[in-house]
Image 1 (tube, rainbow over the protein chains, first blue to last red):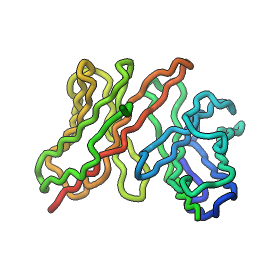
Image 2: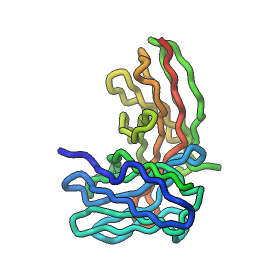
Image 3: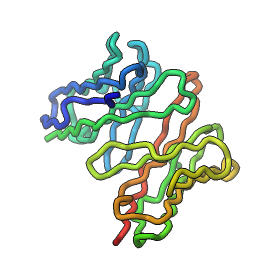
Length: 114
Length: 114
């Protein structure tokens, strides 16, 4: 079974631009979560989508948004990029009904903001 | 106080020794716990899950959970240079929204020298 895939793998943007990242979950997984990882803050939860609805949200500003499509693929968007948005953005999927809440991570998108 | 705390390390151990990694958490309502391993430049991969108090063994890895003291640890026996990575502790808890949230520590960097 194919794992979680993310595109693009690397991205370089300048301040003020916006960016869209894409994630395809493991086949059969309908829940997709997004995380931001930085050296100082570690893995920070952004949001979770299930059945095209956001059902869980972390403490990030409104510049960070996401959506999910009917095939469970998800995108996240960051508008008006700031230098501090440089990070590894990880997408994770899980089976619904999994009481353990085990997350399967994709390879990540490395975003650099100049 | 952070929800999940880990010593950032690095923790240096010689090959063949036991590596002991510790994690404390603040939410007494937390119910399940994960250890993820993350190699440099890669995404986290699950190595252990523990739900009940006590020890859980899987090969060279043993996870220990003490809910009364709110700590979870990971022991790696016969450490190998290939175990050199950052180990992330993650705590699963239910939010008042009725949904689960996985909260990560910032990770402990382990270095195993030949």
